[in-house]
Structure formats: structure tokens, C-alpha cells
Image 1 (cartoon, helix red, strand yellow):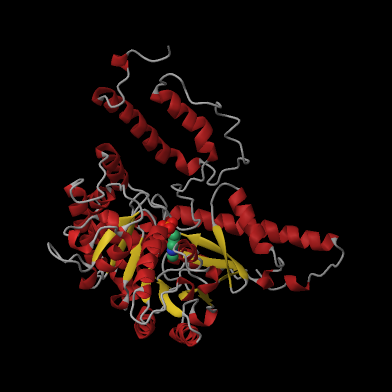
Image 2: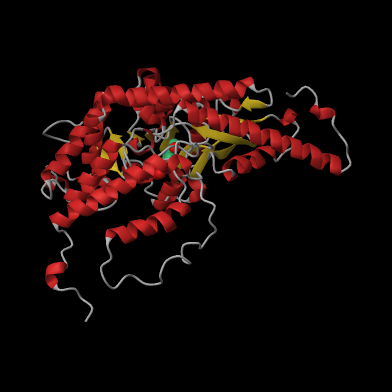
Length: 505
Ligand SMILES: *Cc1c(COP(=O)(O)O)cnc(C)c1O
């Protein structure tokens, strides 16, 4: 009882695929047409969805139309619309027609290319597109694949920076522990990052078994633009070495998450060489910008890095997920991640460059993006996002109640209401709530140098200058209302202090 006649249950029927596929594609196209009108962040309460959906899976087949109806009525209201042109939070997750088509092709072919032989084109295309991307970034030749024979450098596509950091840390750990003179004790290995480094590095260190107490967080300051200094890293490593620790891994960042700071790679590379540590460069966000000549300078010094990663799914129009990782010595990575004896490794088996065995055909997506969009348009996309961010920065600077909080390098502007605007300590948090609560724009925040700052990250694919300008007008309007309300609150409190009001507009 309950099963369909066999001839009706055809889960991969090409005829119905075409029809149902069109319905889904039309649904997505309509979504992009309307997404601007939705409140950017969702107003729902936790648990909202359980009240709307049945407690158990469907017994019988339902038409795709019924599913799409439920997506419209139940799911869309619970989304933060990352593709909204009014989305300025976190870093963008840029989508494109090319990226989506690539994802569809990847899902459609649905092959599993863990080894060369499991699907030769999966491995070979990945090697080729990673070389293409390396050339676009003008990475040193040491990161390119060595060709047909041998192990040199090369690239691999992971799902996230987190995975890339776990794998490179594992390689660094094993390289250090097997080195002559090593005491072979994982509890003596130390890892170095800054207080601006993404928390994923700390998580990865825990995952590969390095005690959290051995994770060195080196403080940064406004004076160094929130970047690491070589001196700070060198003295931390020297102190650890003198105390019987073995420095093993240093992470430098190009474009930190909080404010977009850039660590000085050439100097850090020298320190890494001095102490024999693995040097990883995380450019998850800003790496995409480095295809643009103006920004390539930030990668000067990457030649001293053992590994380099960036996420095209953040800012290079390659739908989730896509993290490019390059290493100078793939042997170090494979030594750590492979279970095969060395003599059996005669081709690239990407399973030995990552955590999982199974892997998606992500290279297909990146290939479609690079072909269908083309390098010139990719550069133009970066240029125009940065130009819009510059415009927003100028608007902030023109309003004397506000200040820019850290140097803008890419398309992220960090700013806040000045203390002299008269709103009190909490004013920027309240401003963020007011802006996001309106549904008309969405931003996030960071705490740097002890200050709560607003982050305005331009780059959602559909964002145009008019959206940036409308968001700024909204911020000004909410700031005006908030400051007025705070003045009234203070008056009601009876302190009547209006002396900090003057000269602010
Ligand atoms: C976003 C980001 C990450 C995390 O990337 P995932 O791919 O989500 O793991 C790491 N580092 C920096 C600098 C980032 O901006």
C-alpha cells in the first residue's frame, strides 16, 4: 500500500525534468526581480517554521508547484536576503547567472571525483581552472601546477576557508613533528595569528589537536592599521622558542573580517622563514579584489607563503561554495592527508588535498564563471563595488556627526556616530538596530579597539549606486531620530544637559 505504480515513479525522468526545471528557474528569476522589495533581514521569531510545516515527510509525491508555493509563503519570509541590493552586512555572497548555471551543471552531472580515475575530467579541470585563477591573481609560479609529472605546487577547491586552514594546519603540524630536532610533542606546537584573524584559524588549531593555550593572539592597534607587525610576531615566536615551544604556523590576512586590514606579507614571510613555520595567507574576502591591478600589490610577499586561500564565493560571483587554496608543496599536504604510501601516488588524487573523500565538481562552476563572465568583467565588477564604497565613504565624511573608523581599502566602510554627536555609549548599537529593523537595509558591526563600529560592505551583485545612496539617507534619517529621542530621554531624566548639543550639525 502507498507506493506509486512503478511507471510513475521516475526520479530522473528527462521529460518532467525539463518542465519542472523551468518552473524553478522562473521562480528564481522572479525572486531576483522582487528581492529588492523584501525586508532584508527576517522579522520572524525562533521556531516560526515548525508551526508552518507538517511534522512528518510527505508519503506521496507532491508537485514542484506545491513546494514552490511553500517556499514563497513559509521560507522566503524567514530568509535574510543576501542577494538583496540593500544587503550590506558581513561580506557579500555574490551570485551570478554564470555561477548558478555552473552549480546547476555540477548538480546535474553529479559525479564524484575523489581520485583521478573516479572521473578524470573533474581532477584535470580543477587543476586547469586553479592555474587560470592563479594567473589572474598573478600568483608566483611556485603555486601553479607542475604539469604532467611530479609534485610541486598547485591548487585545490575546498568548500570553505575553514577547511583550507584545517588541512594546511595538519600539514604544518606533521611537517614540524617529523622534523629532525623536534621533540615530537603536539602540546609544544604554537600557532600565531592576530586579534583580527578570523576565528576559523583558532577553531582549526583545536581541530588538529593543538591545545587552545598554544594559540597566540597577537594584538594589533589603530597605529598599524589593525595589521600584524613583524616585530610583534618575531618576539612572540622567540619567547616561545626560548621556553621550549615549537612555533609551527603563522596566519596572515589580506582583508580582515572586521575592518579589511592587511597584514604586511613580505615582513611576515621573513619571520616565518627565520623560525621555519608554515605561513598561510587568508584572503577569503579581499583575494577576489587582487585580480584588479590596483590591489595586486597587497599580494607582494605571497611568494614566501606556504599556502594562500581566497573565496570566489564571497566576491567573485561564484555562488556558494567555492574556496581556492594553493600550496607551494602539495607533497606536504598529501603527506599529512593521504593514507597511501608515497610510491602509489602517481597522479593527483584530490581526496588527499582535503578532509572528505567525496567531492563536488566545483571546478565546473568556476570554469563557467571565468568563461561566461570573463576577466575584464570580473575586474569591472570589483572596480565598481570599490567605487560605490568610496562614494559611501565620502558621504559619511560629509556628515559631521559621523566618522570613518578605519582606513577603507576594499569595498568595506567602517564608520560610526562620533561620541560628540551626543548619543552616549550605546548609540551606534541602537542605530544599527534601527536601520536593520526598518527592513530597508542591512548592516553588521564589529568591535575594534574597544569601539562598536558599523560595517557597510558593498558588493551584493544587484547593488547599484542608488541603493547605496538610499541606504545612506536611511542611516542619516535613523540617526537623526535616534539622537532626537536620546535628547528627549536625557531631558526627561532631568539632567537637562544640552551642552553637548552644540555644533554637531
Ligand atoms: C569569511 C572569512 C573567513 C571564513 O570563510 P569560510 O569560507 O566561511 O570558512 C575566513 N577568513 C576571512 C578573512 C573571512 O573574511
